[in-house]
Image: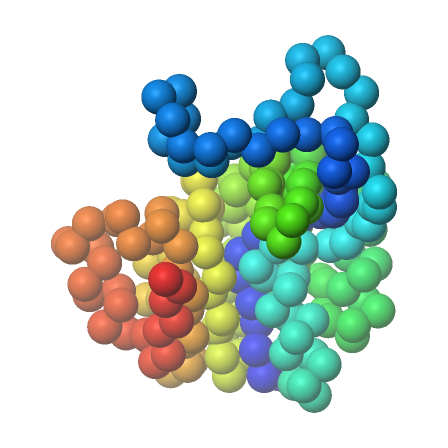
Amino acid sequence: MFDIITFGSATRDTFLRLKKEGYRILGEGEEFEERALCFPLGGKIFIEDMKVFSGGGATNTACTFSNQGFKVACFSKVGADKRGEAIIEELKKFKVETQFIKKDKRYPTAYSAILSLKGERTILIYRGACHFIEKEEIPWEQIKKVKWFYLTPLSGESSKVFAPLVDFAHNHKIKIAANPGNTQLSLGEEILKPTLSKIDILILNK
């Protein structure tokens, strides 16, 4: 039996630290609602450093819980590609159970490029396989004795499994902790109110 199973995104993230002379930051003005990061069109932009990590709500929290000594599994979806394999291998290094990670041949693994400059970040996001989780892919019978569900933000088509996961956990007396994203919080009062009332620990970002 697992102490915790996490649900949500699994991504491959590349962090790029930009050289100061390679970009400009434009302030608020008529053309911009807020400050803007600008590059020369058609130019080469040099970077000072590059690091590649696994990211995503489900994978990050699974590794954190495992480091704290819990027996943890992760449910998400990756593409049938090298990025997906790298995520799975990294989870195994943290002793996270990966049997519930789905591989999808239709969509590549989600990917982010994080541009780091002056203590701020601009993120370029490709919403890949983990944004297309379907209810039928969840191994309901295998997870009904888990002690805790931890639900991280579920975006895109994956948002449709948020309420079913909460209902399932509630019906099987599984404790629920959730950090819903904008998609879940936009579901509407008719769905959101009864769903949130079943959650034991609700975590909200500013």
